[in-house]
Image (tube, rainbow, N blue to C red; front, side, top):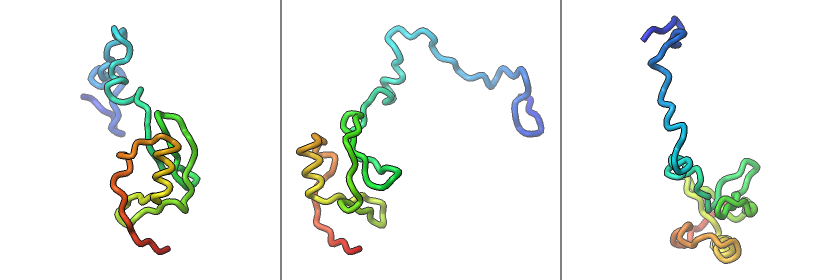
Length: 108
C-alpha cells in the first residue's frame, strides 16, 4: 500500500475503500436494530449543567438537582432513597435500575 510522507494513502488507492455493506436491505436497517440505534434509554444520565437528567424510553422527563445525589471516590453515584422512590413511583423507572438501598454517612 503506497502512502505519502504524511502517512496518508495515495490517490486512487483501492485497499482503503472499506465495506459498503448491503445497499438494499430486505427488512430495513437490521444492524441498527441489533446494535441499539433504535433502543430507547431508560435511566439517569449526568447533564452538562449539573444534576441528573431523567429518561424513560428515550423521553426526557426532567432533571434531579445535585442536592439529591453525590459521587463517591470510586465514581459510584449515590442517590437519596426518597429521590429513588419518587423516580420509581412517579416517573415509572424500574426499581432494579438502582440496586439495593444502603445507608451511607455522607458529610460535605
